[in-house]
Amino acid sequence: MLAFFKQFKLFGIVLLILSIIIISIMYSILKPKRVLPIWQPAMINQKLVDSTIQHQKKYHTIADFSLVNQNGETVTQADYKDKIYVADFFFTTCPSICPIMTDHMYQIQKEFLNDDEVMLLSHSVTPQIDSVAQLKRYALKKGVNDGKWNLVTGDKKEIYKLARKSYFAVLEDGNGDEYDMIHTENFILIDKKRQIRGHYDGTNPDDIDKLLEDIKVLKASYKD
Image (cartoon, rainbow, N blue to C red; front, side, top):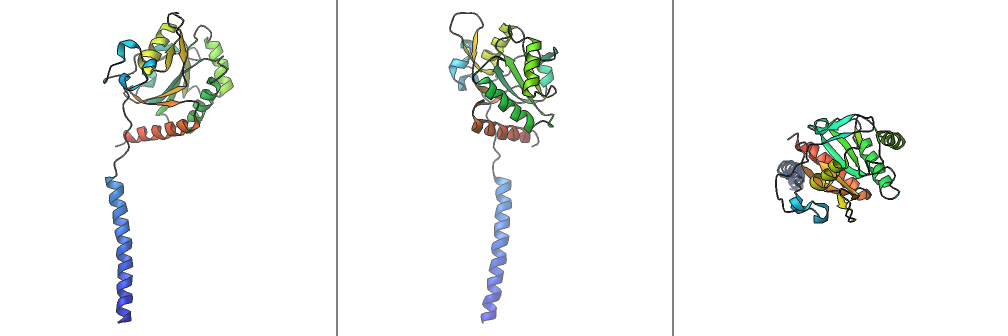
């Protein structure tokens, strides 16, 4: 009798292990994969959005652009075709949040240095100061990889329109000067269809960790 119960106990243990394995497999199959939202102007802090599109609820994409990078090369949306990228707005003489933002951009660059699917794009909000030569000095100082990360300057009107109507990353200056802007700490995650998939505080390490994870989630979505 005792031997019978010992055999039954062994059978129960084996059955329990098999049940755990089956449940784990079913959970991994049925578990819904995390999908990043597609951000629209109406979902974002309205102070960052141009008044002409504040109520837009769908179909928002990053507009075409033509700017010049730290090497004097023209950079357009074609250079980011079929890429996931992180964009921000800064200026090289900024003494406050920009150094922190740039260090965090460098962290992202390091994480995806050998990943051709991911790129970075930093726009100067003071193009009259940030010449190609100035951007190059800054790029060398900050360890920018030219094949991964473009620091761009150009027509101030174009940069302003991109910031206010595409990326939603700057505040209006408020002094009445046309196209003057105050950049924020925002990092913006853009997908391969030029859609916004997230806004992050570029000075907050926790937000950077979340951004790194969200990039991986977005990358995985193209493999499904």
